[in-house]
Length: 93
Image 1 (cartoon, rainbow, N blue to C red):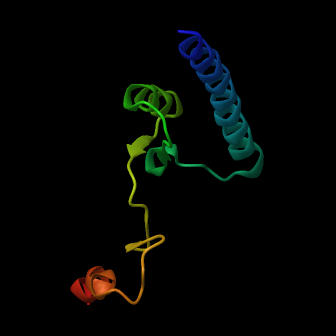
Image 2 (cartoon, rainbow, N blue to C red):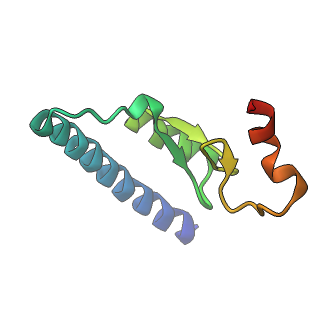
């Protein structure tokens, strides 16, 4: 029971930090003339309940994504010597 209360307080503090981060990104965009497109951004949760992660993503106006993280179509942390690693690249060619 005590653990849940601590998790709740931690999550509430984290929500405030996310709101501050979102405000900071918006201010940066106004000052620099650049725009941070949160619609194209993803949020990943580590050891976090899916409901909490969805609420945080809703606050940031971004998408929830799960692990396997892709970068340029290739999985991060994958083994490039494995046979199936390069299949997405070969399919695109």
